[in-house]
Length: 308
Ligand SMILES: C[S@@+](CC[C@H](N)C(=O)[O-])C[C@H]1O[C@@H](n2cnc3c(N)ncnc32)[C@H](O)[C@@H]1O
Image (cartoon, rainbow, N blue to C red; front, side, top):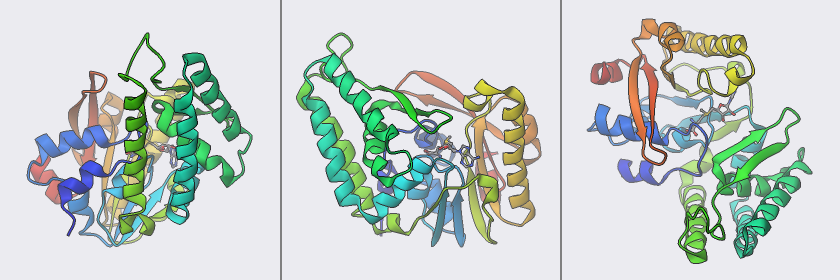
């Protein structure tokens, strides 16, 4: 039997913007102290677990359910997960070669150029699964996993710290950077190769609203948050999108299933979810000293009893 705590702590594939890792710790520590892994604990009570905005798949990987459905609109992400399910060894071997070459660059300009070359390799293969090793390289080596997709599907992004950057050091020396990358690759290997539940996750690449939710389901709704990326383009579009997500939550509730929704706790979001008694949680991110106020909302009766 897998220990719930270990399962959660080790199960994060890579940094990803909005990954639920930070909030998770908060919930575990302060809200439900006796339940080391609340997704593991709750998802087990349903026939289906849906992670409609799966991102790094952190929630799906940490769930414990017979049928897990992980969806994201980003095709590179879904192609990556599917490749990790079908051919992880070759993929990781190739990514390791790319990382080794990157770590061989012994000055900052060379490292930056190598990173730029990888972006070009990715962008030159947009419609092909051959782009996936380059995508994983970028996820592992971009600043906090932030990789922006332009409207044409091409990537932009900034490299993370490199050992050769002595002005703003993150690594003591080259060896420390090598160990850092090795640990990341080993962690992926551990999840996708050694733990059989990973290959049972059903990954899909759809608009979240097009996913039909079966009876007896727990659905996690972790969309791009209000007033972040979307609102950068257009406020009305952002609010319209957040309302669609809320309507999905309502539809799930009305059908007798359960949902968990997270977002920023802006007044718009708090008003939208009002009927489900949302709570504000202040999840402190020790990595960047960033205090975030987030909304956590669910119609799971037991969770209500613990939190509200
Ligand atoms: C906040 S992130 C999810 C993070 C994830 N829960 C984790 O722990 O890593 C939001 C995700 O929603 C995806 N997304 C954005 N719009 C979407 C849509 N209309 N349908 C499905 N997925 C969407 C994005 O590609 C992104 O990966």
